[in-house]
Amino acid sequence: MSKIPSVNYQQVIFALRRDGWVVVRQKGSHIRLQKHLPNELLKITVPAHRPIKRSTLSHILKQARISVDKFIELL
Image (tube, rainbow, N blue to C red; front, side, top):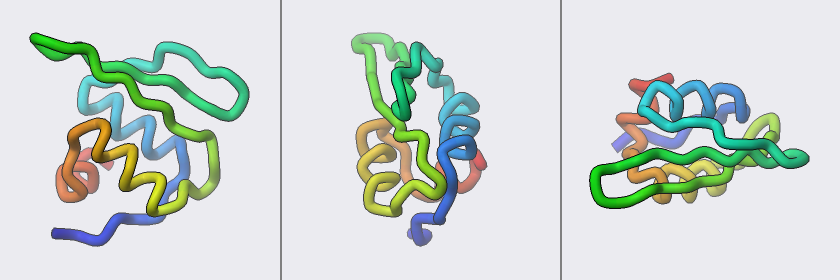
């Protein structure tokens, strides 16, 4: 398992969009994304920070159901 990289919000949004996530809206410094799965709708919020804290990124990846290795591939 790889270490979570230090990235800014634009890189996170780019990687998530490559995984099928869609930007729904932005309110202030938070960007809302969602992804349709066959039986459910996943929703996550990404803060527009440079850089995003590793712990925050870890929580985002858990909610998005993406492993760190898969995330690094998507970057």
